[in-house]
Amino acid sequence: MPTVAVTPAVGLGFSGSAHAEGDLSRLFERWQRRKDERAREELVLRFVPLARSLARRYGRSSEPFEDLLQVASLGLLKAIDRYDAGLGHPFQSYAVPTILGEMRRYFRDSGWAIHVPRGAQERALKVRDAQERISNETGRPPTVNQLAEYLEIDAEEVIDALQAIRAYETVSLDAPRGGGDEDVVAFGDTIGHEDERYELVELDATVSGALQHLPARERLVLQLRFVEDLTQTEIAERVGISQMQVSRLLRRSLEQLRALTDAPGQAR
Amino acid sequence: MAETPNVRLRLSNRAENVLLVRQALSGLAEAVGLDPVALNDVSTAVTEAANNVVLHAYGGEEGPLEVELTRTATGLSAVVRDRGSGIPPEVDAGEHLSGGIGLPVIQALSSDVEFRDLPGGGTEVTMEFDAACSVELQEMAADDGAELEAIDHSAAGDVTMMTVGPTSVARGVVPRVLSSLAARAYFTTDRISDTQLLADALVAETDGSVSASHLSVDVSVAPRHLEIRIGPLQAGRADALFGSAAMEGLGPVLERLTDGHAVSAAGTSAEMLDLHLAQKS
Image (tube, rainbow over all chains, first blue to last red; front, top):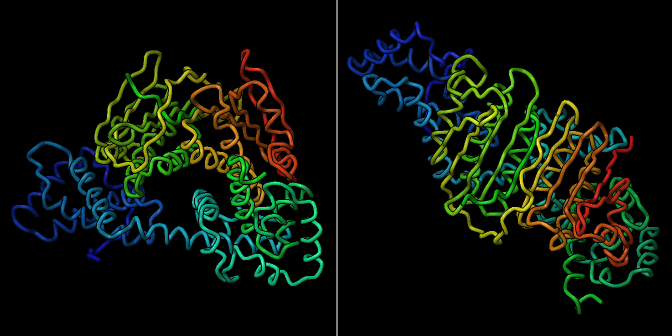
């Protein structure tokens, strides 16, 4: 990671008002012609807010922000070195593509595309845990805004996390509860309450058609939701799993049912 | 001939709607197999253009924000349009929150950008992005849905109109947009999940039963309520969707996920399905 001295941004000083233009070209001249380090520092100071603003825009889903700000600042230094004031374009029109180019290259070269899913998964786990904690404390599942406030992140980040939770394979997020998701016997063991074993048997008696092809837990969750009309939270309490697990089980099993009923001969 | 957009959004220029644009873009990216770095480029540029409409197009008033997203031969294209006073981003340099860097950002991240003044007022920004997409989309018939109507947001309230096609794109886009709107309507997480399940079911069940090339989804949001109009379905299809036969052994799945529905005719051979979702207190 390249290190650049980054001074905290104050305001949006990069927009370059007219009276500062002459001043600015003097600074560039002092740095580029006479290698005056103080002029360079002054330029960095002036345009770090631009780098910061671009890092925030380009890296809205990237973590940690400070890393990306370092990359953007490196791009700024390159722009300060290479800008040709003689061409008559404002510095900003040269600096923006240079800084963005630096960040794009960093994303490509650092395997950001691979790391992002991991970062997103960590956030998804935080959202899941917060969801359970708030549900337990208040007796009611939270809204997105409540989760955002609780975790001090954007509502959009919560929405992305909910989307991710929905998309992940059950194993990755359910790991603490042990694997064997497809394993009906293991599920029976985790229930542990005689009542619920009963429930399973009772509901099984009514099972017909494509439903027979699903694992017992998925059948149970489907039937509690769609036959008994319980909410996902009520099902979570009854079965002893989280609401988000209920959500994923429902999604997966509805998908499987659709696939089964779309393939005649298999299910009927 | 221009390609038919895969996603069209008719929104108001409220700041929170930029999120819907990004969610729709993520859904399209998923459907076409766009890599995350390229998606980040496109999303950053489109966000700049949309923010420009939010901040500058209507001088503080509310007005339309229109977005079209299309898979092209070389990547993606995005159109962001307003119907306002038509101030290009560079005019506002330094005077607004965007700091006048919106346009250079768009220029740096897209392979081509064009601004066009619209007859009757407004500005259209067309951005082209060269990006490898790993999934080919199913060929679509030219859009027979014609132009989406303009919405009078001052009269209609918080309304989102969208057309999306083909089904593989709808599968990525519709659940994302609907769950974002459910979040806006103060739905709790379990009800948001229901909304996603409903969206999945609707996209799956309407595959092949839509009487146009694009699925049209209109949503109006009020606190604790979503009203969704989806179609055009082939006549008679909506009732079949709600019949218990739709999901063997489970009874009326769609009925459980919703809090009321109605069917209205749309021409002679098609119909629209209206769905009501509520968040109980």
